Length: 266
Image (cartoon, rainbow, N blue to C red):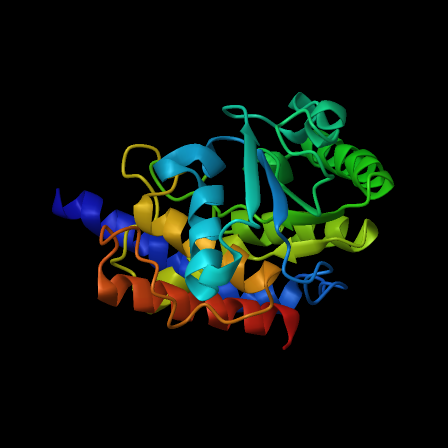
């Protein structure tokens, strides 16, 4: 047991120490702030990374509402997810057509991501890029903007876990985001930074080293909020109805703000 724990901690530490290298070596994002002022009609498109732990879109919406309760009726968030799906599994034409998901007006912002291992193989990386280009044109035609949700790297026991996974993932999302002029949300980098500061924190599920724990989802939500709404998350009162402890919430909010500020050079 002790050997397994030490191995896991070493893996986390090694991965976390890469965050500075990732930030230094990855291309700088061209889009450095949200292109939609206070987006109210938002669609999330992805896979289980979104729907774990009561769904990422619910937590981002609640953070936004906690920050400005007067907008409660205005926010219309939707999430379309398929387990394990890369981008090409989604019918974006159907999802973004006004009325198909119960929202009459076009989505102002579509936040999307691919399979978490897309960056590890040239063919999957190319497929992600091609669909992101295709979907961004369709979304633009309907009056919306695109944001890319940078997925976190795996840790052990995932077989995909590797010291360079985050660097490859960041490079793919930033390069594609720059090509399609999309906001890139540095969620994966936030995970790295949280592990660097607190190696004992649990952001991934123990059983697969891939999917997020509740704390991982909360960190991702804070990073999305800080990126999309151009506002710091620190001090936000939302704690998932008491399920996220005050110390953890404050720490993860701070990490999200620090990561976003560093990534965009704000």
